[in-house]
View 1 (cartoon, rainbow, N blue to C red):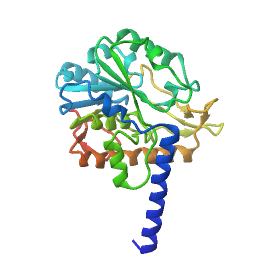
View 2: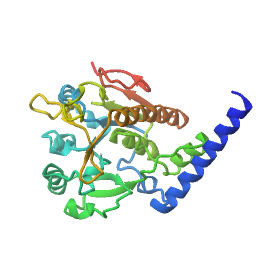
View 3: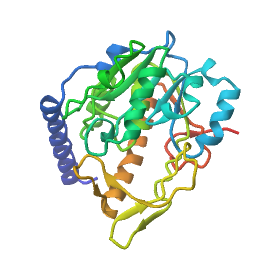
View 4: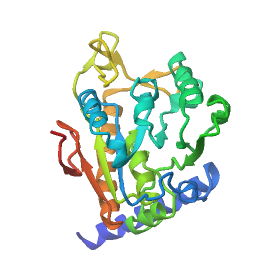
Length: 298
């Protein structure tokens, strides 16, 4: 790299690092909520299994239940897993929500309301619920889950760091920064590393985000989204920004840019995990993630 390029890169990363701390100071704060809360498990150095909502989980869940995987690994679930019949069998110790639709009026649905009611009435075991610290509409999570005493609500930071890598990893070690590169799974992985897990296995993390893309006659970007809990074949639906009111469709450029950022985030997590001596194993057959060690469930 030429000297001029090195100087420009250093200036850009220096500016981005300063901007990150300014945004944190205005938008959030500098408290290590995840680290302070710690782990539910008495032995977080053991294995943690993260359950995504990709279609492959439909085949993996029965086998995880048959093997009673929760006896050998702590479980983390995401998004709408609580609405599945397996929820009270798996009894995940961790649950994580990060999509704006879970805490903003734009995109809020009856299904989301049912999710919170399920958490309120069915969680009879100790569980940490991770939610975004950034909450501009002051959504009351405690009220939404009926003040269930078994659930501890722990916020995680949502500002993505861009700047010097050494500063970035310092932030992650101290509970700052964010895994919010585009999927709830990444927030889950980062939180698991921060509370001390040394082996993290991924199930149902297909990330087949380019499958089924199309543009309809109204010039809206659409995709066939398939989840493990779908009971009927999915149809192509517009992809919306849930944080806008009313929600607006993504453009092709925006979607591909966010998808690229998502996969970049997995590479960042891979490198941070290696620094922390953490092993991340992708056990999802057919997953499009190429950043982690692969050992698909047989």
